[in-house]
Image (cartoon, rainbow, N blue to C red; front, side, top):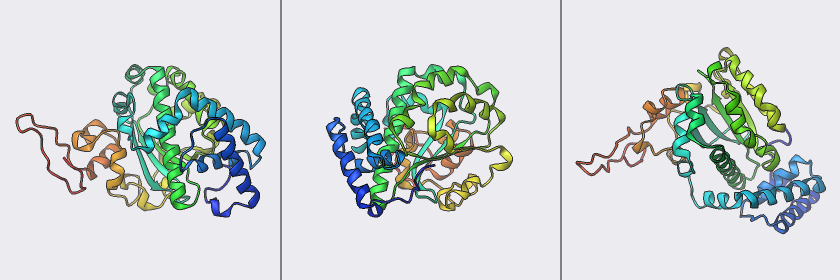
Length: 319
């Protein structure tokens, strides 16, 4: 899995500091629009190439050119300015088919956790029809830029490299969900992390997985690159409490064996839709959806006769 997540700028040797300074100059020269946290991004390139600047330079330059081509710098700037997942292009059409909860909840290594659950909401045909291949590509750019920016920001705040780790509850995902068409639609997205976002991922833990998940993974893993090594797929018997071996109980929802009763207030804004206008329990009748709903104020949809309401729930979210 490469360098340990505990690496910090304070522990770099003089030679490593010089390499990082050189990487910064190379990126600027290549047209990369760096921000106040970008040195952590460049550190990831050096880690991938084991501090060999010549090898890292090639990937930095190719990444800078690619970022200019796809507009990644502009996406990162919009996220830095406060853009949230619910505001991403096509998110309103994609989010009904999979529940994504981006958080700053830490793992044991200090990585940021994202929770995913698609049980009872993902159907192949509906998902394939909800967005074009181009829109799927763009939403993946937003996901990666969101993870990259916020991981760099967390790294700067804590002084140690932060990665993006994922917990995916695959309960209910069976053979009817395995489709070459889905894999094909995502194919342009699969190499992005390895090619342009090195050392971004921590672990990717899939729990409650049926054999179908292993089949699907066999289809896509050849295109994922080095990140495939960080994927663990567990069957139902091996899944209870599995995340507790990688994250503190305070970061793990009670539905997965932890002690986290509700999503912290400052994490709610990262949900794919505002809870004061969206019933998560009804929209996502699965483990993660029910857990979220139990800790959020009940959705209060505007009443045209009353002009809506301004009541504030116990979590401090207007509803």
